[in-house]
Length: 314
Image 1 (cartoon, rainbow, N blue to C red):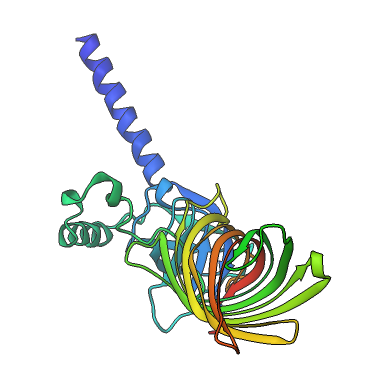
Image 2: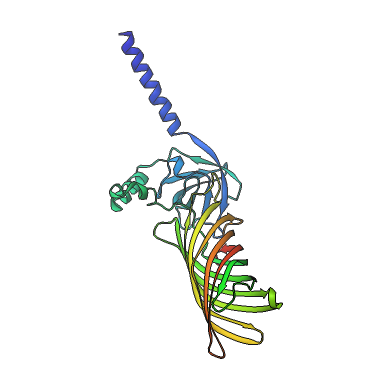
């Protein structure tokens, strides 16, 4: 009898403790507030059992407001005010109270319906975690500048005894957007190159100019713990025209980069701007024709260091 009573009491207090934890409130810090005043970011994410569409009440000593999750990452989440006429009453770095007791039935129904609609259980395990939006939206424009140096270079009709040094700078402007799996981005843009090739044996310098269209696809790794910083890999191609001159002889033709690889780092410096730093390894080929109709093919392996900004206009 005593054993039975003891078990009942333990079970009762366990359930009471569980309810206390479930209905506990928690102090959190507002990480960022959008310029529109309709959304904000906190450092709670998928690791804290949040899901897209979930609702919570946020409050200070003066005001309370209902918000819901619209985008989600492992450690961060983007919340929007449920009332379309209202704006976020908080500021960046302000400490507010999140009421975890609002684990309402409506939010759970939304989650279950979306789960059923997307057939999450039928997907491979590697894709299940990608059905939600993994990160806060990345801005959609990139402007970057690079300096480069040829690691190796060869040209048809040129003696192997001739040594050249090729270096230059590059400016690029691209539009980019997330793919259906939000770890990936695609990008399309323009690139302008200006290089100089020094031929040591003849004490000559050949100026080179290129204009190219570039296309890229990038993979973004999970953000670093408690930040939105992340590392990315990029595969890209380019096609355009090139023009150069040597010893007062001009030559023009086609240039193509097939392919180039980037390893880079994104660091948010504001709500709508990221700093971009990357290193690039590129295989660049040109096919040019001199005025006297003589063709010359050149293949270079280039190394680049790039610094740029990724931003939103709105």
